[in-house]
Length: 165
Image 1 (spheres, rainbow, N blue to C red):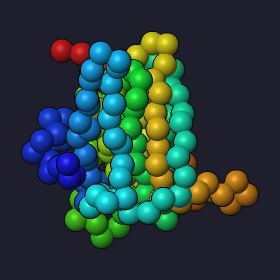
Image 2 (cartoon, one colour; image 1 turned 30 degrees about the horizontal axis):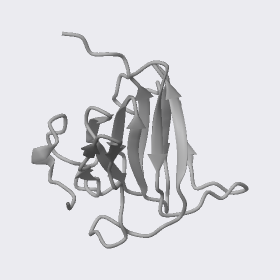
Image 3 (tube, one colour; image 1 turned 30 degrees about the vertical axis):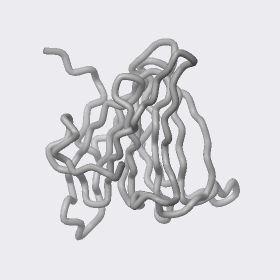
Image 4 (tube, rainbow, N blue to C red; image 1 turned 45 degrees about the horizontal axis):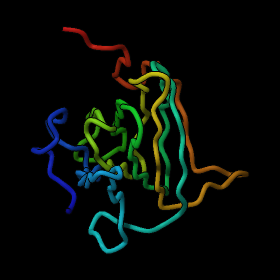
C-alpha cells in the first residue's frame, strides 16, 4: 500500500506539503495480528536512521519540536494518540497550516513528518500509548537535530485541550 492523499484522512482537510500518510493493513488470525509499518521498497521510504519506541501517558503532550534534517515516521502501536503537525516553513505552499491525526489501535496509520515541520502528540488512552518512530537520521546525543517550543506556546495556533461537542 502506498501513501494516501488527504482525501482518505478524515481529520485532515489538506495535508501539509511533505506530510504523507500510509494506512497500515492489519492481518489478524487466531494467534494475534501482524502489520508492517515501513518497507524500504515503498515510495514513502526515504532512508533508515534508527528505530525507537516512546510512550506517552494519557493527557500528556510531547511537543512541539521540529528537525532541520530528519524526517519522522510515526506509528502508534498501543493505545491512541493525537498527532499534530504545524508548517512554519517560510515559503512553503502550506505555511501556517495545521494537520491533526488520531492514530493507534483504532486507526492504524504511519504518518510521515518532513524536516522543518513542527509536530507533537498527546496521549489519549490510559495508562499510556506506545509510539514507534523510524526517523531517517540517528539521534545525535551531543548535537541533536531538534528545535523545541513549549507545547502551549502562542507561536503555534493550536490548543491541545479535548474538543467536546
